[in-house]
Image 1 (cartoon, helix red, strand yellow):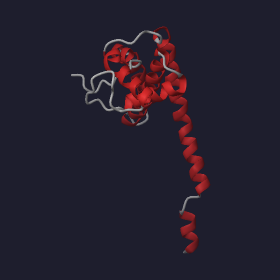
Image 2: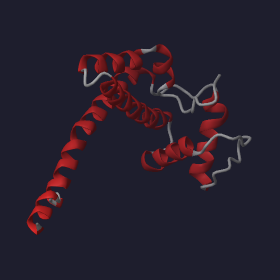
Image 3: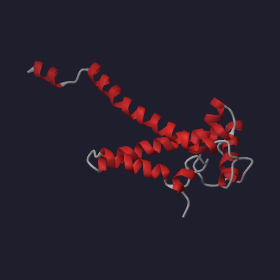
Image 4: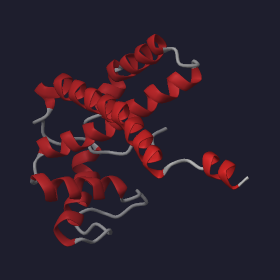
Amino acid sequence: MHRNLRAVQPDPKTKSQSLSSAWAPQLLLFALFFAGLMLLHAPLLRLPYFWDEAGYYVPAARDLFLTGSLIPQSTPSNAHPPLVMAWLALAWRVAGYSALVTRTAMLALSAFLLLGLFRLSRMATAGNLPVAWATTVLVALYPVYFTQSSMALVDLDRK
């Protein structure tokens, strides 16, 4: 009976190998989505900030970048969660303060969204890869998503 319990318990090496092999395709898909978004947005990556970017998100993220304060000093504070601003401040800390870095950081988030959409559509269609690919490509090319995917803003409060 003692041997049967050992046979049922998974080997830690096997478990870590299967976990790392499960991450490889996801990482490859993320890289593919990120590269595709970067190529599609290449002519637009150096555009100046506009709309809510220039009015709230970038100044709030810059305040966090410069002072470390979650409460913006150069723009009126509002109820937006600081996660996007913290993400941008981290990107600027790593790669420097520029519109190119801002847009690239936001496209990385967009690539994660497309990865999640791809996985969700595969699960919803019982593994139908053509439907998952079509769904992901159509969303990536949808004009509203395409436009806002590189912008430094959170579109949670839009009506």
